[in-house]
Structures are given as structure tokens and as C-alpha cells.
Amino acid sequence: MKEYFEIPWASLRAMVEPSVAERSVIDHGAYFTSGQIVCSAAVDIRDGEVLTADGSRFPFDYLVIATGHRDSVPRSRSERLIQYKAECDKIKSANSILIVGGGPTGVELAGEISVDFPDKKVTLVHRGSRLLEFIGPKASQKTFNWLTTRRVEVILEQSVDLTNVSDGTYQTSAGETLKADCHFLCTGKPIGSSWLRETILKDSLDNRGRLMVDEQLRVKGHNNVFAIGDITDIPKLPSRT
Ligand SMILES: Cc1cc2nc3c(=O)[nH]c(=O)nc-3n(C[C@H](O)[C@H](O)[C@H](O)COP(=O)(O)OP(=O)(O)OC[C@H]3O[C@@H](n4cnc5c(N)ncnc54)[C@H](O)[C@@H]3O)c2cc1C
Image (cartoon, rainbow, N blue to C red; front, side, top):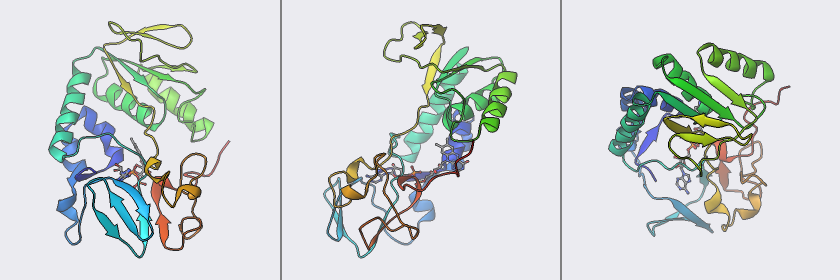
């Protein structure tokens, strides 16, 4: 797919400080010096081989799947750096910024903008009843307090209709009107398993599209196929109340 590795937790920092991306976006060739990197999407798995979008076939004895989330980012590092610069220019040229989604990405972006550009009006709209719902309520409250202390307006239990935006005017699900010079959609990326749905692994996907693995990370029903990372059904954090 893309020709570089990118450190995900540096990406929001890189949006306000594009020079960070110079260090966090790394060409595969710079660190992977022995072995072959194929920059093409895996599209199918047949008995003992993986097929890629460019028509190649790669036989395997053992296969490890790590296609966590599907990202729609440019193919080359240089294009990705240009994209970061453009996102930073978008932030800099706006007086008011709407962020849609109060998960880790939206919260981090709101934090980065409010720290580096304290004079900008930042509004964060989140569909859920609290920010960062995957962690405990105390941490959600702390996050809320931190953001609001930095003058971020946090609107909970509402969504924004992004199909109907005109002249910087946004409508929320509760009928509120918000004004912003630009917006960022931070509602998460789809899990990267759609390519598996017609393969020999289709019955190993759970109802959320994640690969079911055992304690050895072996994919259910397949002795020589393993999965790691976000594509698996392993809980990311112990559940908390
Ligand atoms: C903003 C942000 C901050 C984060 N902060 C933290 C943190 O502080 N600590 C932490 O532990 N975690 C953090 N995370 C989560 C962490 O980034 C993920 O858990 C981790 O990246 C998962 O790695 P992965 O390799 O499973 O999947 P991914 O990082 O999603 O990588 C999967 C790759 O596979 C590619 N792909 C998908 N489909 C195909 C296909 N068919 N063929 C070929 N390639 C394909 C995708 O393009 C992608 O490059 C953060 C995530 C984000 C977005």
C-alpha cells in the first residue's frame, strides 16, 4: 500500500507542527534493509498464497495478518509531508475550527490546536455521552475539564450533518447551528478486513469484522495463519466502569 511507516500517535502533533512529520513518517527502505517490501494491497488469500492488487502472488508457509485499519493517505512520503503542511495551513488560516468526534483522535487534535493556537475558537462535537468512551468515566471527565479549561467548547450527545454545510454553517442533530471556518472529521478509520470477506478466512471474522484469534494469536480454524494488532478481536483495554 503506502511506501512508508508512520507513527500514529505523532500524527496530530504533525498537523500543528509539520516538521514533526519529517521524523514520524519514515520510508520503509530506511529501516527495512533486508527483505522485500511490496507496496500493493493484499486482495485475496488462497491455499498457501496471498494475491495483491498489482496481480502478484506470494506463497507462504505461515502468514501473519496485520491490516489493522484502512487508511486513505497518500502513497509516497513526500505527498504525505505535503498533506501535513496543507492541514497545518488550514488550521493556521482559520479563526474557528470544528472537530467532529470525541475519541482519541478528536480529543488529541483539539488539545494540540488549543495549546499551539490558544486564540482560535475550537468546538468539539461528540455523539457519545462522554469523551474517550473506551476509558473510564474519571479519565473522560479529566479530559473534558482539561479541554474546557483551554476554552475548547465540548458538545456531547450530538452529531454534525457534514452533507449539508454551507458558508461555514453546520447543523447538529439537536438542531443547533454552529459556525466554523473549517472542520476536521475524527470519527475513526474502518477496520482493515473488508479484503478478507471473500477469502478462506471469511468464517474467522467476528461480527465487527475482526479476526478471531486464540492465545497464540493463531486465527481460528487455521493452523498456519496468525493475526496481530488492531485487526484481532483481543480487547484493547480491560473493561472499566
Ligand atoms: C491518533 C492516534 C493515536 C494513538 N495513540 C496511541 C498510543 O498512544 N498508544 C498506543 O498503544 N496506541 C495508540 N494508537 C493506536 C495504535 O496506533 C494502533 O493500535 C496501532 O497502530 C495498530 O497497529 P496495526 O499494525 O495493527 O494497524 P495499523 O496501524 O492500522 O496498520 C495497518 C496497516 O495495514 C494497511 N492495510 C490495510 N489493509 C491492507 C491490505 N488489504 N493490504 C495491505 N495493507 C493493508 C493499512 O494501510 C495500514 O497501514 C493511536 C492511534 C491513533 C490513530
